Amino acid sequence: MASWDIFCSVVDNYGDIGVTWRLARQLAAEHGHHVRLWVDEPAAFVALCPQADARLKRQQVAGVEVCHWAADWQSEALADVVIEAFGCTLPEAQVAAMRAAARQPLWLNLEYLSAEDWVVGCHGLPSPQGQGLQKYFFFPGFVAGTGGVLRERELLARRRAFQADPAARRVFLAGLGITVQDQARLISLFAYENPGLGEWLDALAVDPQVTQLLVPRGRILGDLRQWLGEAGDLEPGFMAQRGNLQLQVLPFVSQDDYDRLLWCCDFNAVRGEDSFVRAQWAGRPLLWHIYPQEEGAHWEKLDAFLALYLQGLSPAAAQALHELWRAWNAGAGMGAAWVAARPHWPEWREHAEKWCAEQASRPDLAAALEQFYQESL
Amino acid sequence: MKTAQEMKANSVALIDGHPWLIQKAEFTKSGRNSAIVKMKLKNLINGSKTETVYKADDKMEPVILDRKEVTLSYISGDDYVFMDPEYNSYELRAEDLESVLPFIEEGMTDVCEAVFFEGKVISVDLPTTIVRQVVYTETAARGDTSGKVMKPAKLRNGTEVKVADFVNIDDWIEIDTRDGSYKGRTQAPQA
Picture 1 (cartoon, rainbow over the protein chains, first blue to last red):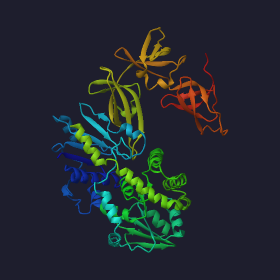
Picture 2: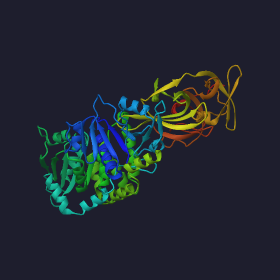
Picture 3: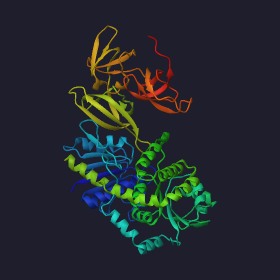
Picture 4: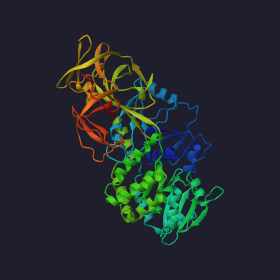
């Protein structure tokens, strides 16, 4: 058993803490490590893990020691592995302690997930930090030569068992106040602000198939409220009907419940990194709202993922899905793109399972980190 | 100190007391507006080579280098010989010129800068803008004159660059050597 310190700075969403919390749990549960997760915004952590207490400086949750990374952070006993998540800057005291140690810990910068070609060439490379201190860049990814993506050992078995059990699905959804209508298509929606939402909702409202749109609390609610013409904030439990579209606002759910929600839905609109990966493991068609970057750098990342993800689809389906994803991220043209994608639904559904299986054939991120650590010894 | 992003190819950084020549530096946006720089480094003491990655805003210690104007004298296999105005010649291997090699060709007249570390030539910098002749490219198919539609074109030394669709065989073009990008069509350099 080794000791791991994971440092997470919450920037503006739940993506950083979402990924690091999953990773911490998996390293503890599946690899038997002692894991400390340092988070600078405990409130963000509690949103994902409601059983935790944001007031505590240190607490044991799901086999992980979760600690508040305060501004006056003091060095503790050095771990065997130190992860700075997404390039967050480690406390000076931590770097000084590592520099002074007789045996330096393995220092890793866990980077953002990207499907771009350059990732393979950068994954695992050293980054000398002076005075003999070495850091390594660790890149998650979708192809051989990268660090893979997070996937718990039993995740797909649990997902398939759940999806094969209509009663479990019904009970879970009922717990969120959702009653599924006969023949309704379930769609989950988790996205950044998106001016293209209205066009999509217009299309869903006149779609011949009934849609139940489930919207956990998040940044998209403002656009939803505007489309509905509601004056006040939309709170969990809010429901509305427009044509063949029923909308329902859900509370912000725990990671485990969010997984189940994705598994229940026929189509999942997700955002950022963590929910994006989880939607892939759901084995259902998905729509990704990528984190918008300066100078439009996110478009290359979106296209790089699509270049991988769309492989194996018929040209017509690939083009329709490509246009749908681009329309969603451009915030325009969603109505037409949705209608154009609809005929390809059966093919897309089958493809989503194939993609999931293909990705599951690669080592997951935690296993890849474990291997990297073992090879460093 | 300079940031990793400011350290360009053919500069030298002091890392753990050793001077490392940055043979290649590639800047990439990673995620959420952060960026990284991948570098190919050569140790100027023992000749060893390595690849590294830095956050774009990581601090690095630059080494001040001597520079001297030179022009290409001749190429012999993997050896590239440059000459200064006093007729001193400086020989470099192709591997020492990695970042500029795609734009070096026999007969070029560009005034370059030889880079010296402790009196020894370690690399050569090209001017930011160079002029090269296109020896092959497909004929413009769409009649585009905006310069926005690009197509591949081959230079005399075999290097392929993206050029505007209206560029023809034997045309002379300007290239930005920092990123290899096409800048525009131009006149043949005066002999």
